[in-house]
Image 1 (cartoon, rainbow, N blue to C red):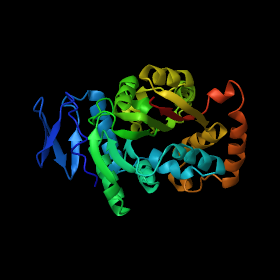
Image 2 (spheres, helix red, strand yellow; image 1 turned 135 degrees about the vertical axis):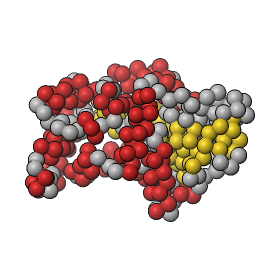
Image 3 (cartoon, rainbow, N blue to C red; image 1 turned 90 degrees about the vertical axis):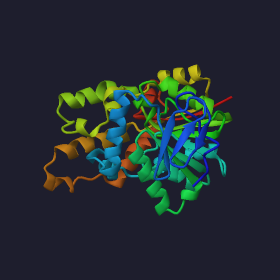
Image 4 (cartoon, rainbow, N blue to C red; image 1 turned 135 degrees about the horizontal axis):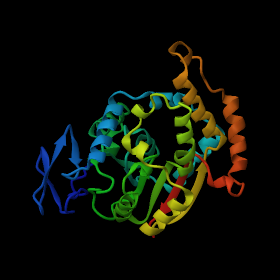
Length: 320
């Protein structure tokens, strides 16, 4: 694994930490932070009930993925998807140091390592980070990575350390996204890049989700959603621009992802939940359906007004 002793700082006071074998000791405030199975747990001592619930939920998800996670096998990759997936990589270089923030069990971070980067894999849930470490070990790529349990709003890494910070579908779940973005700004090098690859748009949470609840199309889903996902309401285009401006990050790319394709995926998941168990396995999405809808999506993303209402945003922002 990557050696991170010189990178970490105290999440409480930003003081220097000393590795004492089984824990890190802050040389300023004297707080101790445990190291379990080679993974430092660098969380503030007083986590809110909200964050405790989030950590517990994603720990359970890491050990036993919910239906909403397993249903992702409905998604069919298209040329459009692959183009959007590759877009962020033009901002990466070999051996870049990347912080995967809210990285869960490590799927996205592992792809960055395969691209030639070094990755610090992090999440609020210790068991998610532990599963990420197992994933890297199985791929024989753990020497290109480090692992830590952290709070995105109190990042325990020194300033101007990372070339890239990567987040996938997690910023909208934070209670204080502006605080997290300011921490990200602090940790990025000059010309460092923030990648948001799949941040949910606000309109879905404000309109389609309430409608789905009214029509009873979310049967059982709430038990499979984190408190953050239930409480928060996505990020609109204007809100995204505001957050980045307030942080000091310069917006480079604000790319919409999924219009009709998003309707296809979400409606299929809703139907799946309502079907009897014996019929669930018969439900599928055909490749030609995805190819047709993604072709239309390419047109929709160029139409005024409509283009501001995709399901997801892909964002690239740079620290000046």
